[in-house]
Image (tube, rainbow over all chains, first blue to last red; front, side):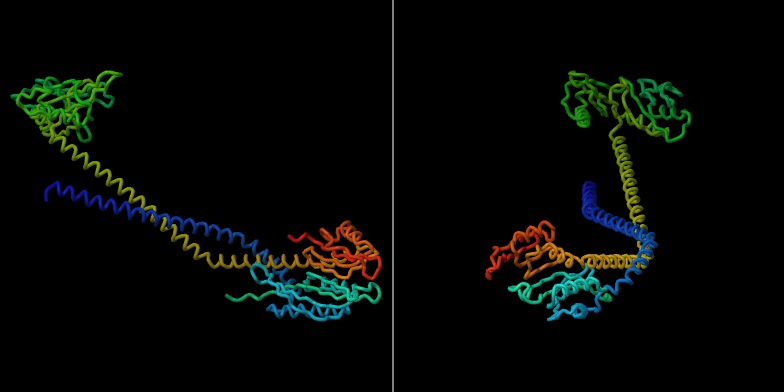
Length: 192
Length: 323
């Protein structure tokens, strides 16, 4: 092998190595380093957030104490039951009892499909529709009593129809009423 | 610096400022006595200085031949030097001896034709000068011809010495490149190590704080959920009397000479009233005036009572018109 051949060989090997370094090793190293750097930055941010969270722990504790006190008052405002059917039954019973207490004739109380719920899914709403017959005063008294119930019951819709519409004032006033009432119940948390 | 004249050698050492020489010595020489031993003897007497000694040798005319030519083709300096070397016998006296030559372009003033400065030295003499310096243990950094300071320096070192110098320069460049590459690698490795340590440290710290973080996050979620529940129930509670209030407001605004046969109301501010009155428009006006319902409007035609009474049957819709 002549010196010229050796020189050519050296250059060839050098170029091949250089190209491998430049086109494979360096891009890989840069990618790896930037990924690691991004990880470090993300972890630093997470660490800072955690420290902030820990620093704010006393405030959270106070807030939770206050909320715990308020949550304790929450139970009487909700319907009984851990499922929609149970809550609907409780709501229907309450509406029926209130109506009977106001001397209204209860024809039927039926659940109405209701999909409203809190975003976290724990607090859900149920609705019933009650068909009643009575006079205006009794219906107003029912709506008023529903509004005063310790459980949060909300009359959502009302439909009234006079039973003797063609003869106003001819016979004692009888009104057929359909009252839609809503209430809330708490869905127990499922363990993960 | 060593100045080589026709029959005298003059060695000088210049101070830091370069204004006056700090040491000067001279010695005669001739072709017969040979120049190398004379240089060796002359440099042996130099005062010792720290560091490795280097020497610039300037050969004076007519030992070195110098030409100014304006007829050379406009090529780059390296090519000009090669051209002159190849045609040395055209530009210089050879006297049967091989020559070492160099050439450079002279700086031009505005519009003046470009001139080249050519120099040549007897190869044998050039080698003898270098040998003398080597014998004295001095490294020659430049062998040139004595010219004015304004012209470019010419290199009259023999081809062998030039090759050795170029090889030394290449080695030096390689060494420098290797050092730079090593430094870069070292910097990269240090950076990567620091990054690794940082990653490890943050991971450990996060693992240590993970239970506390999880507990606090759970607490925060619970708090948000409880707040949301309370808000929802408060809003529902606030809306409870709305329907009764609307019903009472409508009842209060109806004129005396009117009655309702049907009524639909909801908490979304919509509703439908059917009934009869002496004048249906009076009912509309009363509802509108008292703001008992939003946007009341008659729906369908107002019809007279079929029983012959002076009543008008009406249907009034409350709420925004359907789109």
